[in-house]
Length: 400
Image 1 (cartoon, rainbow, N blue to C red):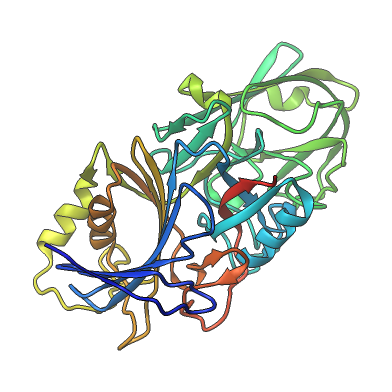
Image 2: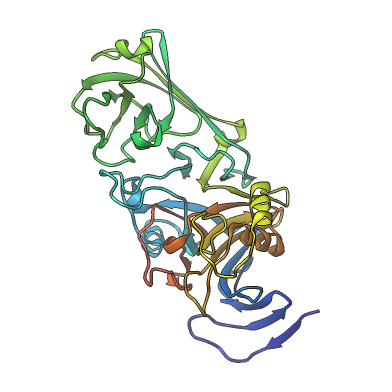
């Protein structure tokens, strides 16, 4: 049984309307008039000391949409979540109502690769980076279907009847990518090192890339010095010196061929917006078994304790979940004793079940965890200020 206390007080920023006191804590509704089909609230979880912010979007509300954004519109470009939302508002015919931080990647400079994503990013039908943690991907098709299957990329480049498999798109060499395609979305140059491989500068490609893609190309030049400039109307294929495939010797200036890309399962080729995180939290309403097992093996559960094993550590968290009726975006504050100590991933998964989610993925957390409502930072990021991040997740609304 819950007690609902109606308040007539209006807080200017939060527009508080009601407080629900439940066994697990207190939920305060925020911004009740922001949009039909959108429910926003602050959840003060008293099982442990944790403050969360939640957005619930009705999938039946046709004016609301899920979108993603890339920091500074390129892979090697970080930006705050609030700045990404403001830029989106200026560029399009949709208004960003909710914005949270997105996936994992390189936040430091890392030899020029600061901004590189570690998993899938599809934006307005453009394939910008490929899936790596295949289970932790979420996508929305052109018809509004939600997908969270394990997803794989199949990409090949053909030259003189020889075919070479491409493993990565816009990824750094140190992430195990031995054949990588760099598009203009990466930035101005590839940031590769000489003697580690060679780069094939391609022209004639139809850009942008998409998930189901086929295009002829021509080789402009072969670069052995590293850090090739990426042509605005082409791409650069980097091939590690470890690759001994017969096709490598066929990539010479003037040669032509075909580049092909597709995702599987096939419905992922219709995804308009997609993002990857790290670790699938929920599948068919069941918590990831690895999280369950690790939680059960804890010798002593200490509320708020940080741990070297991040799955068990109480940290700021960001997650995306959904069911047949709703999309959920959740940010948990952390690393702030007496206010909010954060959650383990096991706790996060179970809270998502409590909210009603049946499918969920874990997004980047820590100091990156940011919750924006209509241009304002609502949560308390653990770094005391907004961090520049790699990408962001939006709930947007049609501008009438």
